[in-house]
Image (tube, rainbow, N blue to C red):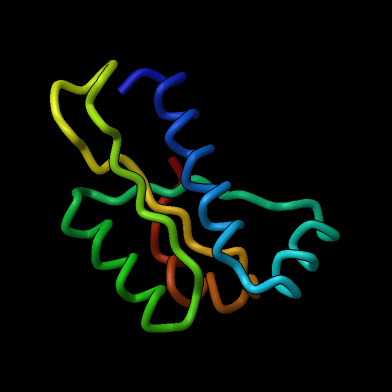
Length: 100
């Protein structure tokens, strides 16, 4: 996926996750500078696994599926936002992943 398309998909995920977040967590995240980290997984199966793990941990998530109207020919799951939440809690969940 081109960098611009990837950026837009990440923006969709970030906004959606923020809108789903607990207000005090969201306010703390904003005060701390709204940190975002882009990580990579090997495939959709792994992406869905992290989505479920985050949900099971009580962390807000936003799984984004592109409608397939521009770059993709069909509906395609593109990215996942996890959080905002306590950084230590997020690191336990995603600390093994590599930066994108």
